[in-house]
Length: 192
Image (cartoon, rainbow, N blue to C red; front, side, top):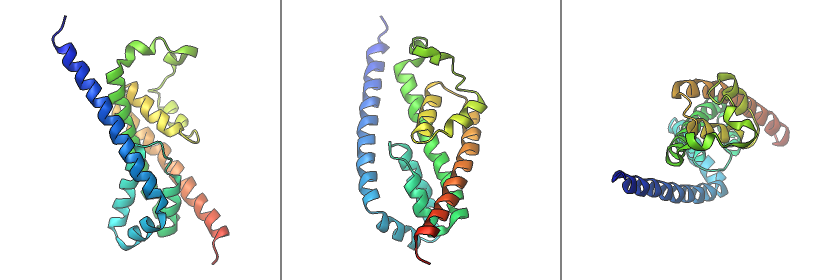
C-alpha cells in the first residue's frame, strides 16, 4: 500500500472543507452585498476609474457563488451606460468563468473524474465538452448554463486556452445583449 495515500486523502478532504467554507463565506458576503446595491453603486460611482476594476472583481466573486451576475450588469449599465457596461461585464464574466473553471478542475482532480465519467448515464461521457462549438453554444444556455459549462470544462480538463477564447466569445455576445437590453428596458421604466 502506498504511504502517500492517507496524506493525499487528508489533502483532498482539507481542500473540500476549505472550498465549502470559503464558498459559504463568499455566499454570505455576496448576499449581504446584493442587499446593499445602492451602496455598492454609489461606491463604484465615486471610485472613478477604479470603479471599473472593482466592478470586474465583483463579477469574479460571483463566479465562486451560485448567484447570477445579471443584476450587477444592470447596475453597471446605470452607472456607465451600455457600451462600457458590456466591456466590464465581458471582462468580469471571463474572470468569473476562470474561477469556475479552476473550481471544476480541482473538483475533477479530487474525485478522479476520469473513472466516474465512464459510468455517466444517457451517453453523457461522449458529449464533446472540449469542442469549441459546444463550449460557445452551451454557454448561451440561460440561467446556470454558463456556470455549469465552466465547472464541467474544468472537470473534463478542457485545454485552458481553448476554454478561455471560447468563453471570451460567448461572454462578449452575452454581455452586449444584457447591457444593451437592460439599458433599453431601463430607459422605458426610468423617468427621463
